[in-house]
Structure formats: C-alpha cells, structure tokens
Amino acid sequence: MAILQAPLKVSLLNLQHNFLLAMPGLVGDYFATSLTYVCEHTEDGALGVIVNRPTDLSLLELLSQLALPTDPRQVDVTVYEGGPVSRERGFVLHSADATFESTTHISEDVFMSTALDVLEAIASNKGPDQYLVALGYAGWGAGQLESEIADNVWLTAPAEASILFELSHEQRLNAAAKTLGIDFNLIAARPGHA
Image 1 (cartoon, rainbow, N blue to C red):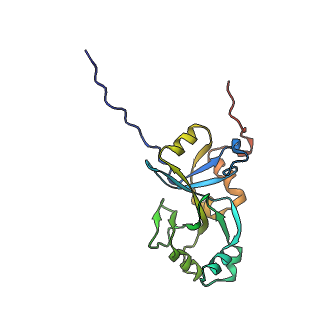
Image 2: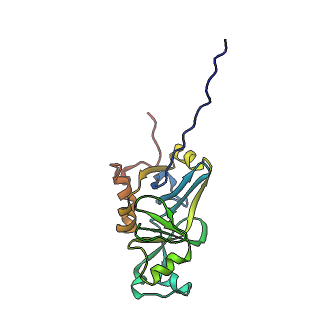
Image 3: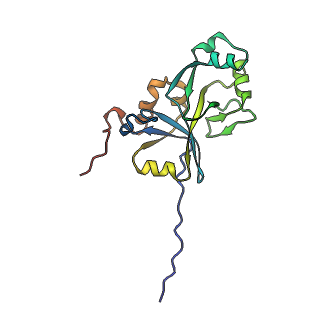
C-alpha cells in the first residue's frame, strides 16, 4: 500500500527590516566589514543598503550636483556607498514622519524613498527628521541570500532605527552585533568544527 505524502511546504525566511553583518571570513571581499540593512526580501530575492560605508561625497555636494538648493549644514551629512548595484541611483532610508511618491514602508519606524522628491524635501528642510542617503544597493536573486546565510557569509540581527539614524557609521556594526549579545570583534574568521 502506497502512502501519499503532502508536498513539503518551504517557508520563506523574511529578513526585511533586519541587518546583515558580514562575517569576518569575508576578508578582501566587497562586503567585508559591512553592515547591510535589508529593505526588501521576497521569494524573488532581496535588496539591501550598506549603512556603514561612507563615501567622500557630502550631502551638500550631492544636492549641488543635482542643482537642488543647499544648506551649509548639509556639508557634515555623509552619503553612503549603498552597494555595488546601480551606484548612480539614490536610496534614502528615513524616519516615518514623512512620505513621498516613491516611499516604501519597510517597518513601523523605517521607510525608504528612491525618487528625487525626498532629496528636494531634505534640501529645503522639509524632509524627514532622520535619514540616511546612500548611492547604490546590494541585490540577491531568488534563494541567493538564504544560501549565503547557510554558508556562514552573514549573521542576521533584527534592525533598530536607532542604530541606523543615531549612531556614527563606525559604531553601527558592533551595535548590531550587541543586539545579539555578541562582541563582533571576538568572532573567528573561520567557523570551527568539533
């Protein structure tokens, strides 16, 4: 007598609004020492923005290049290298106190906008209270991110808006690790086997 089995249901690991901490074994890799914020994760793939890799470009310079009004206070606002894909495209992670035509609701306290209107609002001091501007993004195809996590490329941690918006880029990676109770400086570059 044959026993019928129901097809296995694969549950999708949804990492939207999580951090990806590059494991120390990625030495020399593009993502080495990076902290990536996952903005979208579906069965088709994932999109994230690196949030701890500053560029030499200030927000003042970026707005000036776009011929938008500038405020001298924006010279101290850093623009980040968000990832290796579409480096000419801007991504603004911001607080929930402002929305725009291109705004995507990621979590209760973090939104993402990708159109020029968010930068226009920031330039005219009518933008969100807290924001992080990045050029480019990191992208993964279907199942790719899950495979990389299984291969010990990334450690995942629940994201916190305070880490994104209130800490300096130097503090973000360790702060994300501390949410897991880990001192990231003590993690070995290669996993051990007993």
